Length: 172
Image 1 (cartoon, rainbow, N blue to C red):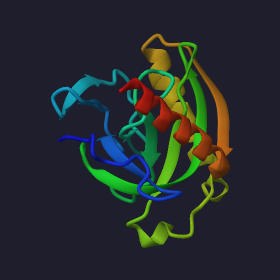
Image 2: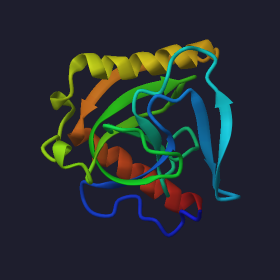
Image 3: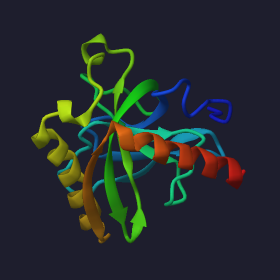
Image 4: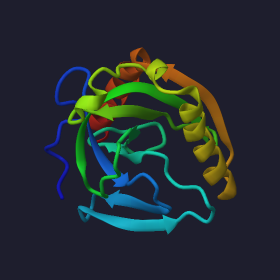
């Protein structure tokens, strides 16, 4: 699976998101660019499970040295390697072991039931807190220091996305 030709943003306000971990999973898969395959990285050693399908925006480079992380709200989990055209609606500001590790929250373009969702203000606050708590719990159990700085709305997404796209171009 060669992701190099895939645009991070197929059109303004949209991203291409590659799922690594389906919602409900304790298995943490990672995409290995060198070989073009998804591989099992580890199994979470707690009872927490990924709250949404989780993956990355291809051809981006975040501050942590990996592609920009993203989650997508799905009615049903997809699968590792699934490509989803999605609309970012917000951003979880987080620091992992001192490095910024922001995570986009998106909705799939292909789901007509979510066509009217454009802002994290349309997502239940307890659902957003569940996501933040998931990262606090699983990362702290791995011995990492996590700081959740909170959620920002869709208007904060573009600056981060563009910075990560530019960083990937420079890094090539």
